[in-house]
Image (cartoon, rainbow, N blue to C red):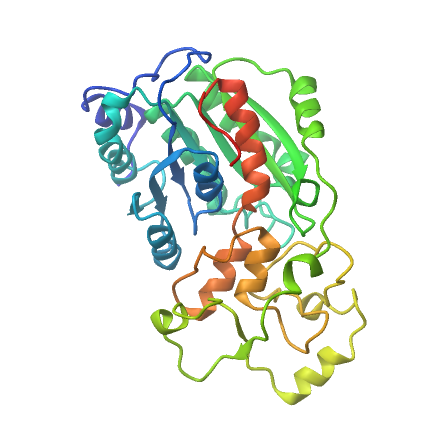
Length: 368
């Protein structure tokens, strides 16, 4: 059920006591680790970054059951909520999840990586795509929960002229609630991720940020590029997936999610003949000396390994995204690659969250 602004705000106001920092200006120090809720959480890329910084992830909201299965098993202390963003169930679920933390004086931060297919060059690129409306749902959720700050992530195409009106509407919704929005563009390869992946981030704060100072801070955190072989070379040989697949059986392996697709001999021969760094989008071969190109799934298949005549495994894709091996991906085999490739690379998200924590004085956040 969709709610108007009064209904959403009302369902939150009925909960008492409120978050210690709700409605207060940025700059208050907190004696507790920040709480984080993740809208359109997917498998939890933003949430993992938040946890690595010392935040307590208390809830994730999404409509994909496979993604929520992965999220819930990797964040057992958080509530996984299957709901549309901005709706009554999502907002009330987040408030309920936070109820046990009201006395902790912990500030709240909202995270969100809404679906990008309507904006992305790999998607429809249609400004009227229904999925684009989720961005305003994110704004409504932020207005309802009134966190000290928020981080919203999407593809860099969202910052182009074609989508200017939608971004302006998003910013106006938040400005009316007392927030300021700073859009920035970063590339994952500059922050320890072995993958070229340009992303747009919206830093949502209660005070106006100086863009030049913020970008200078990001420049100071840049790292040397990581070639993909550095993250893939030590993995064991991948077994070919059998005809039957069991989520639970597979995840008992020492290296989970590391099963190769069943390619015909003709396809293997085709892959073997592709030069390093070459090939069509559906069989682009990785260059072991460089970061991978942006990972896609679906009709744009994942790239093929630089050494073996096969597509990369889910675990290899996860490594190219910056997920550690103890982060396990659940759900149908066909959906696992989509979960990973749709995620925000955690090392990039961690850098952005670290800067946002500094800007909002979230206190105990640290890159551990």
